Image 1 (cartoon, rainbow, N blue to C red):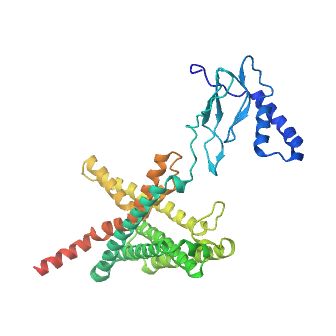
Image 2: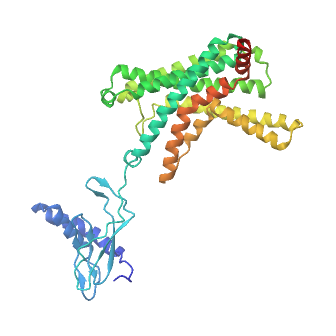
Image 3: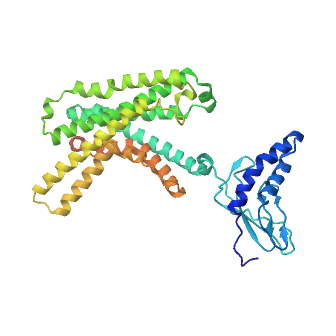
Length: 394
């Protein structure tokens, strides 16, 4: 009846069913009964110790395979949703409902409306992944355009080639190479991924090399700023070749070790992607994470020193904090700190997952653009040179 609470199967009955099921299966195994008959017998066993008085509905199994135990007339029964149906996994924490009518027969209509399929991420977020891919393409295109302009400005303006700008120039170069290799990876067909062609593995290796060099040049940026601001060491004494070695040479043995590991232990799918339980990719991801953590410490120290100097000045407290926040926001893309946000678990709910997908796509694809704007187009020396050229033309 509508006003009565749904009947749940008794724990004792469930225990009895579990004890009787092996006996049922053993007794019937010799005659090779079909699965539907075995399910019916299991359902009857489930109801064996259920005490029912008065009219009742007999235990039965529906076409989906859900067992509806012996139930008193007028009761509404709830049973867990099926775990699998037609190859699709369902949420078993939800319930299906069926009424035992007053005349002792089961209602023909079974309420499975609350049984929702558990879709894998690729199917569940298919549309969002497509939109995120468009954002990725758009962001990488804009970034490559801005990075090439920035690269040409640093190439042409020889008068501004101090160590700081040379470091910016190399960082911009790694962004260009990384983004170009990203486009090449997107052009590789799925069938080529599966065939694991040697040239395809080479493209993945080169891409990962430029990814690592990109992060190591962010580390070089952090080293330079930390040395100049926190350690108050004269930047004139710093040697360019040391930074070039850190940025371009140290990633080489890391990627070689990774490639050897892939060749012997995960030689599949063009070495792209990471299977659960496989840890070869941590050969290069580990140093990248370490670099980001060190840069985070650098950022903390730089902002701390900046706040100390601002407090010693005569400017108001509001302006001090505004300058500190501005400096922090400008340094985030330069030091790669934004990538640390991708280590955060977005949570299981759909909204968190969707926000994470878009946030990830936007930051990763547009970071090259932000670096170009902050460290080239808004660079005081570049702007001054442009002003001089503009005045000369007039």
